[in-house]
Amino acid sequence: MRSAACAVLMVMGLALRPALAEPDRAGTAFWKSVQATCNATAAKPAGELGRRIAQSAIAEFNQFGGHQIDATGRLFHFGLTEAEHEQDEGARQGKLGQLGWWQVMKYWRALYGDEAPDKLEVRGYHDGSTSTQDGQDAALIRGSAGQLLRAAESVTDPEAREMLREAALRAAATDTSWSAAFVSYVVKQAGVAPAAFHFANAHRAFIYDAFATSADELNHKTSEQIYRACPITATKPRLGDIVCAHRETALSDLSEAQVREKVRAEVGGPASAQSIRRSHCEVVVHVDAGARKMYSIGGNVNQAVAARKLNLHGRDLKFSAHQGGPCGRGSWTLRQPDTEGAHASGHEPHCSLNDKKWFVLLQLR
Image 1 (cartoon, rainbow, N blue to C red):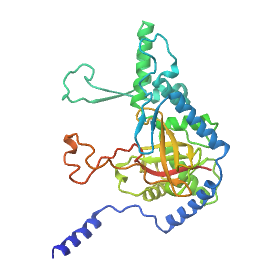
Image 2 (cartoon, helix red, strand yellow):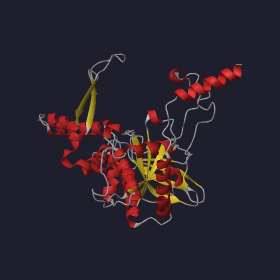
Image 3 (cartoon, rainbow, N blue to C red):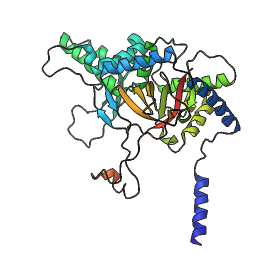
Image 4 (cartoon, rainbow, N blue to C red):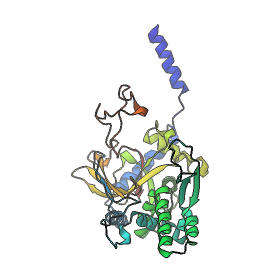
């Protein structure tokens, strides 16, 4: 009787779970056709544009001097961050390129020009600068860097005015996500025109464009866009391709294929209905065939431009679904109030910075 009751409960539980986005017959046919196109392109060497995009990302990583993450997902070199500088202590003079926030503003200015400060958010909290009580409630204050820059103009001392202006931009660099601006900057530096790539402050702009391009190709429609959407773990990455992960809690139980199918169904619909709003993308810059590894570079990774080493699988060197994993059982023994008993329940903390919800490869056409 107990076994029968458990079986009934399991069936009821499955029935109560929200339906996952399984591809229907049309979706299955769509992805089969897309995969054939992706495979045909991946079989060819990377073109000149792909090499330029990869080199643009590498040059920017070297200029920024950011983090390095190995194939196990461990950060083994901690570099410059968005709010820091590389000047020696006591130095009286430095270069602007050694300032993390200045580098980030370079990406924003490439996207918005002189209007960049007005596009960037700066956050504050009521009484945050004066209160000494950590339990005090603090209401969020939102503004723009442009507002603060204009307020700083009333300061008569030129050095104080400049420090206030830089403080506003440094705050904007930390308060506004800039990973999509970085990818946009890298692609733009490679000579790509706006008609061919959606330069934007959110990855979803060029993610949804790539899905639309895949649909256009299937329907024999022309498109100026340089990227198409490909299944990530079934496609060999090349220089200049872009790998993307999502950070949507509502989609965390869905497989990569289910997430792609959900996005495909939303192409052409209103932006308000798009499921992928929080995401992160990086540029493929090197493939080490012998080691079955690839390197990607992205912005705003732990507050820096970072280079990441990722795993490939099989003779075809396709992107691996396994990018790091849980820490060894019992390896983290520090007691934490919010996770007390987590190990006893079978949960293990993930300690790989590469273990993300990777779901699509944007392939350079």
